[in-house]
Length: 338
View 1 (spheres, rainbow, N blue to C red):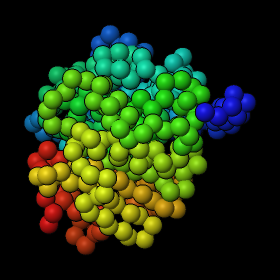
View 2: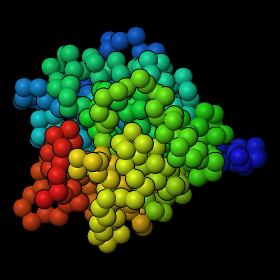
View 3: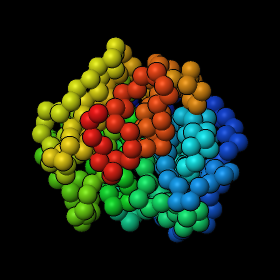
């Protein structure tokens, strides 16, 4: 544990980060009256104009200092959803809950099943599914930084809800329970052991069925959320997926390394994307036409939005286009090596 003075210094530095400028995302509309909302969150959504029967749902959680509109503008999720025919839900933090607009991933009340912010997001999902007749077997979640940590919390607390998730620059579930601990974990200090993290995941629910597959993305040069957190997330999920420490498959293209853990059936259950030269943020590829440059969205020629969508069976690779997603189709369909 760092000293109190060091914690206060880092909190001050974190609050000095300028708020991301507001951008208009014309596709988003408010989602109201979605439940009791114990976490006091707002919600926005996009549903395609020509919605197909039983479409998928992607839940996207913004990072600190961001809004749902900013996150959509830069990540491109609603544009991809409009083109591919799936719905997108954007939970949004409010300043009365967190002055930096971070989801409270470190607060036990907010990440516990049927409590706080986690329950609010769960209610949003139920409302979306019922209102728009979405496919309950194709619900995915992703998030950046604090949103990535909250996405991991949702996967842990409600594993029966999600098919898969993508965690960008996030942190392990229940690795911190106070603000000072949260800043320590962000810096890579005091991370619980793999066994301890696995126990926290298993205790989050009484789930006995199949577990969501996860994809972890992290920059090797991230000095806001230490890269050690990415491996800690992998270790947290290895237990429920019954996979060993060593990945089944490793691939590399330039600074981008992909490690894949497959279960006994050959299903890809954990992916770890490491971008060696990248700092804190979400990797994007503006040339693909969906994502936009902005604070914490880093144009390095790799689209985390498209890669996640392809892995989930929500998008195709164009002829001649390179993709690290080797196996197409929904996770639960059981992707096999080509």
